[in-house]
Length: 296
Image (cartoon, rainbow, N blue to C red; front, side, top):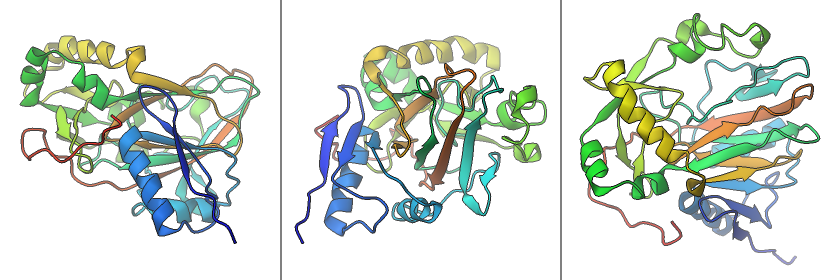
């Protein structure tokens, strides 16, 4: 039987690649998986089309990368605690992920990435934006890089997932977000990290979960954080992905932000997300540089 080689096509000049020539419902041969893994590291987010997977196949693909990190706030797909349901019904006005963020930065060891599979999509709208934090860091001035290199930031989840947080205040979030009592942890991460797999220096703060710089007040932190956020949101660091049933996006939470657009009022959108575990993220100055990909 002939073998169709895996193809990697850049999705935009900033980040992202489309992977074709692979059926994720079946075990992936080691050479093909190596190509896919390299594309993930090179491009920050990889996309697949027309992948009609059972929950078991979705889980099996995720486990090829790392153990699964079960989200403690999202409602799970019935019978599959490993899969978080990201759902918006026609009568709901609030979506999940409707602002720039990176998943699980509030954890001591942030997740490697999230594998989001589209089950039902609206006829139009519901795209997701992605932004590359390595490119954002590279474009900072040398003075700003020196300022940030020794800083650490505090990340937390209570203001989003806690009993007085963003989702608790939204009356149409019933049944989508829960376990508010688990949203207590605050953690400290370097503001500039050395990516644990690529060695690339990367900006590691985000508007959703970063609270302040460690040792600074929130008021003192706000000006510099907002400057970094405005910089990282520039179009030249981002791309926009349109979904269809069977589409998959797998993004690197250590290297990217994402933003789910909420522009499909009155329509249903159902996605299944599996998050896979990562490794500790070191500050940029603490280890020697690893070889970086030529692509980015």
